[in-house]
Image 1 (cartoon, helix red, strand yellow):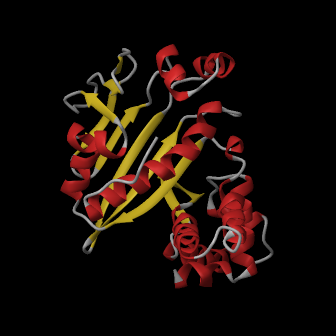
Image 2 (tube, rainbow, N blue to C red):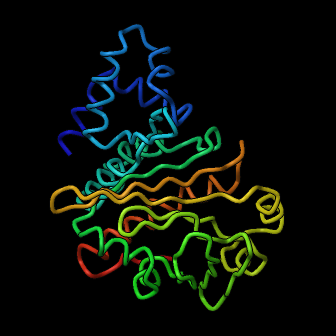
Length: 262
């Protein structure tokens, strides 16, 4: 956590985070435009933010886009909330909210987590029903080959759709698939009203990609959920859901017991 606090202590780095909070997924050139300093200086600040895991770079063709990563803020909030009462941790909670707010201005959600496990074990946790049911409450019917159909099973509800497919499958390094179909049964179980469901059904289907990189005795997991339209309702929902879900995944792999989920 020392690297996180050190990164946040510099006003220039806080301005970079503010800029990404306003519009996530910017290139180095775009970030430099808002600062009166050289490209090299901005690069050094971004490198420190990346070292602190507050910023995640993602390649898009020839460009490298930079995204806010909420994982370190979540870790700080969890540690201090557990140790002290809620009132004394209120300021940290507000910081977490500030870095995660206004997801509707973006077309992507990006989250990076470091998990003490192996790439093979993490791949199993993302695909094996025995794992996914424990931290997610969801299982998938698929052979995980590119182009194969995916059926989502959740609490006795079976959701099948021709557009629910595996996009990429390169075990244990990369997995990508299209997101699930918002059905009336899913909406009822999730407490989603008819008006919100109608808006969700009007949105185009999105995709989620898991990039797995070994880092010593740990694995770096980067989740990119993209393809959202401006003002997406689904983006707001997954921006709240992914951090909790991935925290449960990390806890399960490192302790053997998942976090409680609803």
